[in-house]
Amino acid sequence: MTELLVKRFVKNYEQVEDAGVRTSYGTLASMVGIFCNILLFCGKLFIGVLVNSISVMADAFNNLSDAASSIIGFVGVKMAEKPADDDHPFGHGRIEYIAAFIVAFLVIQVGFSLFKTSLGKVFHPETLTFKWVSLLILVLSVCVKLWLSAFNRRLGNRINSKVMLATAADAMGDVATTSSTILSIGVYGLLGWNIDGIVGLVVSVVVMIAGVNIAKDTLAPLIGEAIDPELYNQITNFVEGFDGIVGTHDLIVHNYGPSKSMASIHAEVPNDRDIEISHEIIDRIEREAYRRFGLMLVIHMDPVETHDERVLQFKSMVLEVLGEIDSRLSFHDFRMVDGVERINLIFDLVVPREYKPDILGKLKVRISDEVRRRDKRCVCVITIENSFLSGA
Image: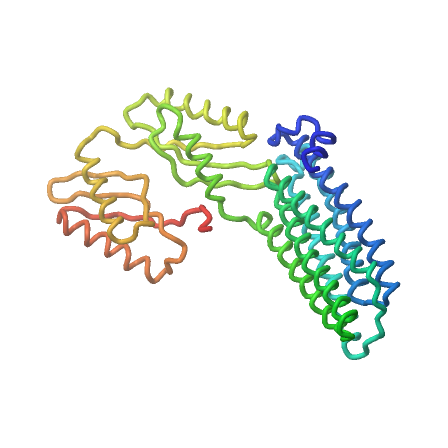
């Protein structure tokens, strides 16, 4: 069904890096979400009134909020599609995140309202009416939500959309809440116990938790999040794959919306190669990065020694020392100022963020001592920095 809908409504559906295709995916997901949730709202509201169940009606209005969320998501996707202008040179892609945050707020608000209503039903329960048809429709509702979750997850993974993945998670939350509602009616029908208000409380809490999780997922790219390891490897391997690039470090990616990013990276080039040749390679990488990934990549050149055996020997010694202390430590921009009685080893040290400021000073001393133990002429000049890579 998913592939049938994609092929029917998304033109050039395989070109997922294209902004227009990505918008078509978002529009399809929104339209399907609106249709399914309005259908579920009408069915559950009818059942809730029929059996006088607050948990069923609470679940119905949760679906209505999901439909409103899909509408807001649709508007957000369309607005995010607007091209760059003088005031917004990087486009309007972040509007999609803002729309998703509004959705999260609505979900939390609905959950809080349901919590208050359900709490009243706990202290003042009302008589329920058991009907098998209501259970049947609710079970069908669970099946629809399971499919909707899988649908959004599949499309979200295909175009790398946090909003769709959050919607998929929200749909799974709905599966849990509707299942709780089925439990409430089933227990009343079989045992005569009215746990409607209690189940309504559970439903409302699950709804609010889903809203908070959606808010966290959508705020992360707005605040600024660490680089995903997969994306980090993709970009660094791409840059290092060009002839004349020895290595890379200090990759930073700035997100301006899904499929709209700007990045900067330091590329190491041999220090004995003509600077104009290296510059031409850098320009070619930047153009190819935009063509292949749609990524505005800015590259800073770092000349490094690649032939001097003496420099490489001391560089290897520092690498050995860092490996013995902590395998997560790394370094770059290594330079050596040679002398008869003193050798300065200058480099930038990349440490995990868990290292506290009071530890960093001791770390410098330990590295320097270990290096001097191997060669007493060596003095380490260390600049400490953190990686921008996610620790996930």
